[in-house]
Length: 345
Ligand SMILES: C[S@@+](CC[C@H](N)C(=O)[O-])C[C@H]1O[C@@H](n2cnc3c(N)ncnc32)[C@H](O)[C@@H]1O
Image (cartoon, rainbow, N blue to C red):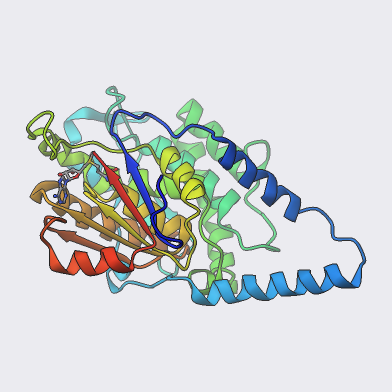
């Protein structure tokens, strides 16, 4: 990463680099954040500093780029639809018929239908794994601070029962577990605990964002992902995607803040732009020259934003455009105002 001005950060990543090394500077940042968490001694000067810090944190929340995009109000693509569109590769989880379950999400009026189906091909979408991960992450990552967890976890309660039913593939037990999960979720929703999460709540965790990105990819891109292979090898337009864990490290390394403006030059299907908007709550731009990945990126953004609402999580403003960053006039304006510019070839 090179620094050309005080405020602008440039990140260039050659596509052959598999991961960002754990450099000394990354380590130092981690140590600093650990020091901040230590208890503060009872000294007037330090108390003042703490108050000042808290004030600044509050200001930060006001200044971030979270945004409720109108497109997020649309319903997400149902898991059931993925299976119905590719029915020949699935069989019922148990017995003769594929049963349907409906899962309640934290967002108002947000629920999704899943078919209890299994595929023999590990590359295909796996609805049972999706249910398994979704309920666990909702219970562990979506409850606002101070809310009692009546879902349990992998060792106890409703979540344990659902996980067990998924492992043993017992339809009746899984349906009972989901009914119990929905009852708790509906009670929480009625009490209003999720109401202000998108406006005032903290960003989603990395684990939850990774899960939402995977859900969005499975629904908006995977069914037609073969179209992404039609590119000339070793050209600038060769298509590739970076791992979510790598982008997570990049956020630390480039120190991307909620007040920053981020630009991905050559944004592909938009993975990096979406992850950064969700993790940092910053304004996130992407430009992609090729028509197919650019169209996929827009579909994936719509699905991702709907799903962020399903989980009641905030997201930064997202702008995606098809064009050549060497010629596009509107992007040259973004280049001049961006704080972090990312290039991966
Ligand atoms: C290796 S991919 C990276 C995709 C994305 N940044 C990611 O990490 O998931 C590089 C992308 O840059 C695009 N690209 C190449 N030249 C470009 C240009 N002049 N303007 C816009 N996009 C370009 C390619 O089409 C390709 O999708």
